[in-house]
Length: 217
Image (cartoon, rainbow, N blue to C red; front, side, top):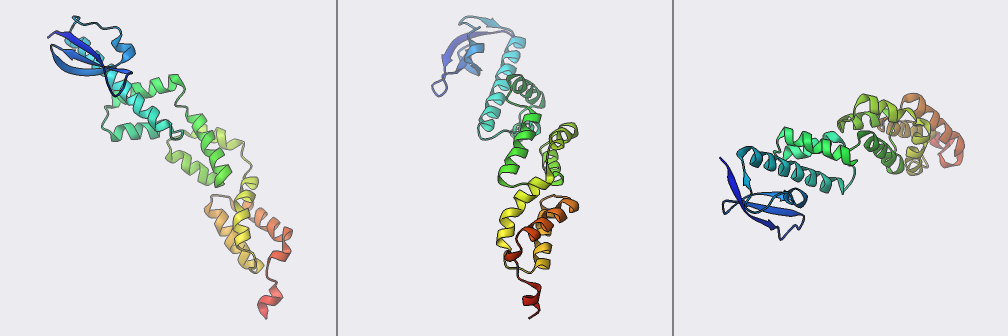
């Protein structure tokens, strides 16, 4: 059943969107660029109306994702989960993600690099922990392997150990070793790296630790 466009009205709250009225009733909204192709009095078939509504659904999904991405980068899987939680149709989500990728808003490799850089700067983690986190974000194994390949786990472990080591000053060496080592293992560093970093800190700062002799007394 065909219907006639009776009015095209720029929305008051969003000048980039136009309300489309069919036969005197509000039917749907459209991005202004899409609405520019329409005119009052134009007759639309049911298929054309369905197609326009699908265009609007994708546009609104893209807008929602862009607002989300304004906070921080998100992976493709995170955006999909967010849109799915709003009960947006899977086909619409697929089209929205495809458009976001074309626009350069979604890039899982760039996201993985951002995630690792952020961790390195504020809360260093070992490769095991980073791999787990990136998997949780829906990043593919091939991208994870690629971005983790250039990491220096020992350097990251030393950075992670600095603040913790300061808080452990005054302990006996064995207790310092046990507590700092456990901390680094929880951060996802391998035992060989942990042993190397802890040994280095013990050798570098002998005056920071309680002597074994004092401990025995």
